[in-house]
Image 1 (cartoon, helix red, strand yellow):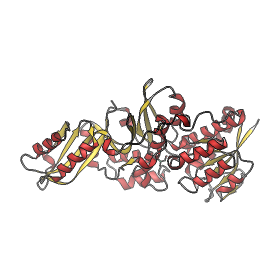
Image 2 (cartoon, protein in one colour):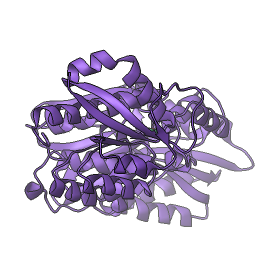
Image 3 (tube, protein in one colour):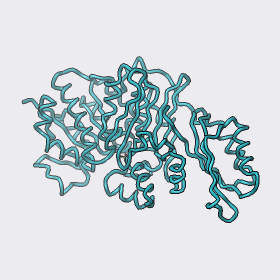
Image 4 (cartoon, protein in one colour):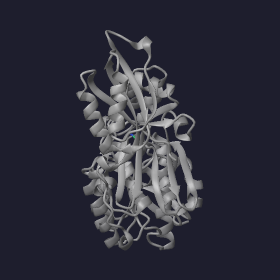
Length: 433
Ligand code: HSE
């Protein structure tokens, strides 16, 4: 049987998982690929005693893998921007195919990398970069190729979802984050998970594959979950909603919305039921309607599953000499539209507001009248006498959909009221209608 030779750069959580699954399912994978997938070199700075490399030579310099003339496919699992970018560009320059799980690299440098790969006629595959083990990139690029896609939204960071889920059960943020790190879910810098940067990387890639627009990570809006309190989680539940950290990409005629922030989702919606490290991505196509892709969004073997699927894709193309089957972002470069990401002022959303009000007569009337002056309709308003403390009482409001610009102005006016203390807490809400 023929073989395709693979070099793995990085033997951390995902690298270790990839190595293990390739070894365990070798003959099954060979059957699917039409050839043996042989790992001929591994690069890692920290050798792992728990992994039996079975005599495969290992190096501490990732560039040794790129420079090895016998390697067909470089699997980049070191993460981060550099030296990953340099490594991938060097591999492409040497005519090697690349498989990567590095969403940060693709979201930020993908336009440059794809252009280089196009020139050299090699493949760059990145399924594992988005939503871990869920084959969502393949689903959008291939399975939904007939559709105009206008909305892609979902839970695309396992660590954040794990934290929010455990907080709902009353656990403390810092303790749950440590646990997610121990389980191998979190990024090397966990603020990427908690502040929405990791989700914005993934959303950037999803939006480009779904809408046919260039990768524009720097235009993505990110808001993290570190400000979400158990109080807001409980009150959202009382209103019939659950707080999820969502990535939302919407295609409009004048641009695209690209935003990551905590969001109220109706408790009855499937997305609200997705707990723990699991991810779920909703993709709305004009022909098929709403589809959802659900599964483990992080973890060693779950992510390895997507890495190996890409290796198999590349191997098939090497064996059958068919070149890149599908364009990187699912659209021919000539068909990419110059559609820009809209400013956050122009997005449309419903809002949950928490206002710390002084317990004086007429406060609710003033609050409602400010919202109405700004054209904002209230869906529910809630104030509980039992929460009155030191003359202050929280007012919880859920609004209908408005433009963010209107809401910003209304919040400014609310915060200027003598009866309102501190900043108004705002969490955006989505009904997915
Ligand atoms: N830190 C990421 C997450 C890993 O928690 O989703 C998978 O991309």
